[in-house]
Image 1: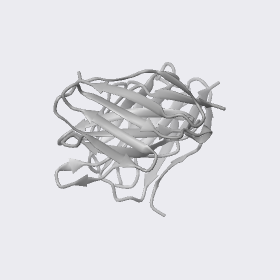
Image 2 (image 1 turned 90 degrees about the horizontal axis):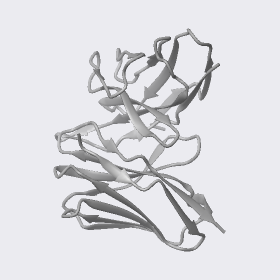
Image 3 (image 1 turned 180 degrees about the vertical axis):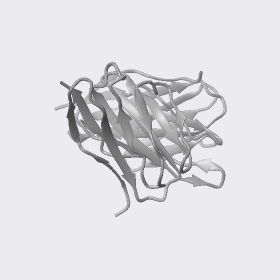
Image 4 (image 1 turned 90 degrees about the vertical axis):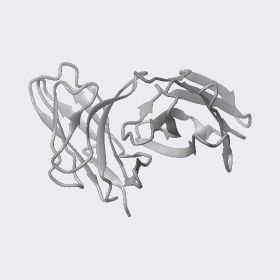
Length: 111
Length: 115
């Protein structure tokens, strides 16, 4: 079946940029999403990108999509301690209502 | 305020008991989903439903059951047949628009512990 891969952990210093990477296998992926999960809470949609886009920026967040390599990244500028959470990458292909999620990347921000 | 709610937030169950987790949404979303989350495992799909009175098994449906009698509600029953039910359970919903299902909205989750 289709797969979404993420590294499990990322540690950064407060104020630095964080880059969380994701690779996927479904060449028909239409939408790619980034969700944030804080401890003990549900997932919250951070941002999404359509497959016909290369980049999307939203305040401190920048999403880059390399469709050829099936690689998605989320860059968080000026990372704060409140950004510590698990970040999930997900994708859906057109018409599907079952997204495929990665296992999540735990972002740890230390002073 | 529109949203998706789950109750209770914490649930304790004795072995051999069935328990039902509630999920309600007032977003007028068509599709609803149940996921199970274990540490380091990501999300695993238990059941999903596109429309009222219809639902399909996900990847790990054994030991679980659902119903979809109303558009707003998608309760999950964890039966005694589920061998290892201690986990964090997440409900989600999504809107169908112009031939595409949009992003999922998630509830706050229910943590189930079997004693």
